[in-house]
Image (cartoon, rainbow over all chains, first blue to last red; front, top):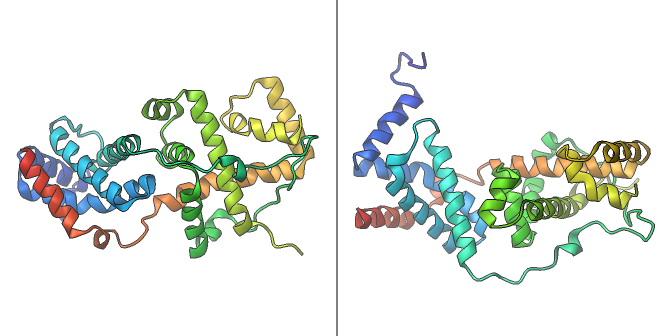
Length: 205
Length: 81
């Protein structure tokens, strides 16, 4: 049903590609690397914030995928499969490298008075998310703000909100308790919200 | 429930993990407190903005990968076979 007059559909193309990878065809591997290394590098850069570590993670991810191609289940897309592999490779890299001292996240969290009222009450943001995204500077601000989060919080935010892993899976990958994942996610979101606030707050008057 | 407590319970509220009585208190506070409502809305928008921005490629992807990296990956595969 997916077959078109022009030839096999993408799923069939992919099946043939996987067969060529399993047969060890050099060209199929090169095609895989050229097709997916860009987006894999983007994922690794976001998690590792270091070009050389990101490139290492991508290289390690491809090596794992070459070794595991026989176990690739046709049910998922190659892109999805590779994505998971590079996320894992980046996490391994994060774990193996020297932990850098982090700035405390408290500075970025909302502050409250003794009576429980906020020091700086929140106000609505001015644009809908859709039109706001049309502003390149806001997109850049979102990226920069995520990068500013302390690593242990940023990693949880990326896995939960961006990679859309659930709490249990994130806890397993990071060797944390599910409750610790929830606490870090909430703080990371609050900190990110605080960083974006000045870009989106309604101008006074 | 104070504003501070509301912010503390926000994630549980959104994940529908707040017990019934607390949820009622949460919603009751929300109805009477515009800054907390604004906080909730902007918190949700933050999550949405992060998702949307990170889902987009940052630039012309294929040009962004150093050829040296592509060759290193292919070479390391040849070595490992």
